[in-house]
Length: 125
Image 1 (cartoon, helix red, strand yellow):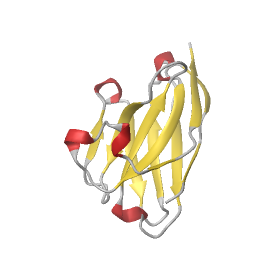
Image 2: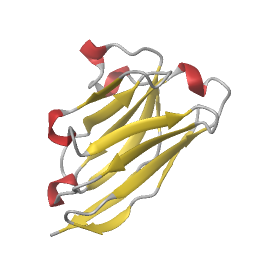
Image 3: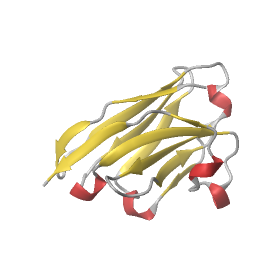
């Protein structure tokens, strides 16, 4: 599976942005998809994940109520809709794929099999 993110950019605090991740391969619909982010000089951290069917989602507390993860299996694409953006949301956003939706390990980067190259999101104050 190859993953390509897009949609990043510069937005003012309080604004909205949607990032997308297009996947290649016919098995996209069988993967749990996740979004992570990495701010400059910091480690990569979990943001959100969605099960293969889209029926289950999981968010880090800091984005609950502001970010929404969704997927369109017909288009092999997963989205992260971000609203009420804050300067601390500034980071490179990565999508990732894994074979299981296991909440206990959902936030661990090492449990994801495939990664995209990332897209920069910058929120100005």
